[in-house]
Image (cartoon, rainbow, N blue to C red; front, side):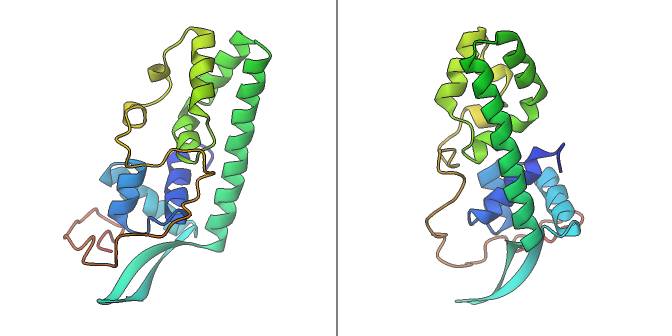
Length: 185
């Protein structure tokens, strides 16, 4: 999964309590088609399972991380933390050239670093100022102008609360046909 940081964001969202297609989509800001493909790949690789649970209003389907998926997420979180730490060290040492090169090489990982609470946005902003660059050149628009629906805080990526949706109430019961993955859960 090295080349696809969105996989990590989806795994992290599921671990944080987004167990339905629409909630994962809202939390990660990944479009339907890409999210469908990611979920298919994650299920095929054994990182997630779709399970049926008893709900207050009858059975409901939810995504859960497998042991393999949890291990993969932990490994990727560690790797992302190492990449961030390297950038911080370069910044602290005042090495603009190496920092800019490192940032260019790791650009695709920034959304996952932000999503998982690894990247300190104040420090990142300082790094960008240090190099005389704009943050928008490194962070995609959908993550720059967050409406507050996604917690990009520094909590290590764990949602300590519970899913406050109050039950299934038919979430996802629209007849989406995304081709492969069952989004009707």
